[in-house]
Structure formats: structure tokens, C-alpha cells
Image (cartoon, rainbow, N blue to C red):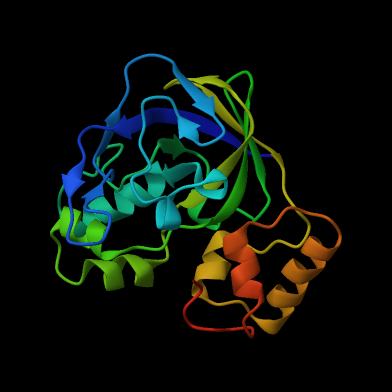
Length: 217
């Protein structure tokens, strides 16, 4: 299996006001200095302001790849430092946007995470970025990163190794889910769930719809 590195562990810097029902967003994240503890709902010192859309156990941690960040640096003509997209983990050498649903990672010595579902860009993200038609642009590129749930707690820090421990045979990625599942991919994920593999509520919601829907969730 492949391996990469953890460039930064990011936590909320300041809560920013929003125009939605929640009223604040925790999207403004910055790299932490030193070790950070990981628990069932994410990182110690972090905040999930809107758990309906960006939190809970199946969305405890959000990872984004340095390689995708560099794509956006070229597109935007500006730096995309760790945490800029609201991610908790900035990784290198690991393709978070094309991670397989159910793929398992080990970060550092003890923390184990499982890939659950793609990030869906929202208006708060667009407001924070201040870029024209940002939601549409981010979605069209399908460089979304991935949410993860915590299987084993522990402590992580920048410089840790990120190792892919296992990858389900169905091969359906979080990018596939966001783009719209083909009938074959739908059947593969359905079969994985029926065989006992964990599927997040977000993925199960997708599977209740017909295959190849344009909007995943």
C-alpha cells in the first residue's frame, strides 16, 4: 500500500459569522504547533460548528492533499496554505480526493482513520474564499478531499507518516461518489454494505437514490 506524509494538523483559528441558521463557521483553520490528540469527533481544540453538514463521527476529520492545493494555487494565482480550505489534515503523497470509500489510513504511530465520503462545497466556503462562482469551480474540478472517521484514537503531528493500510476491492472513490455513481459502482457499494462493510450515512443516502444522479448529496 502507498504512504505519504502529514504536512500539517489544522484546528479552528476563529469562528467566522455566516448568514445561515447556525450563524458561525469553523472553516478558518490554521496549523497547530506540536502534537494534537485525536478523538471520536475529531481533533482536540477544534470545533464543528455545523454538525449536520460538516461533523459527526462520519465527518470527524477532513483531509486535503498538497497536490490538489498546488493545482488551486496555479488556478488562483495565490498560495493555498494548510487549513485554507478548512481541512484538518494537509497530506502529501496521498490522493485524498480519489481515496476509496472504506480505505483505512494510519497516521503516526497509533491513529487509524477510515475514508467515508467527499466534501460538498457550500456557500460558507464560497464566502470565505471570496472567489467568483467558487462552489461551481471547486465542484467541477472534483478535487474535494475526503472526510474520515476515527477508528483508533491517539496523537498526531506534522511530519508523521500517513500509510494506507487497506483498500476495499470495490474501488469506488469519494470522487466517484461526488461525480455520480454508475450503475456498476452503485451495485459494488451496495454489495459492500450488505457484506458488512461500514458505509457512512452520507453514502447510504446516495445508495437510496438511483445510480448516476448528478448531485450526490
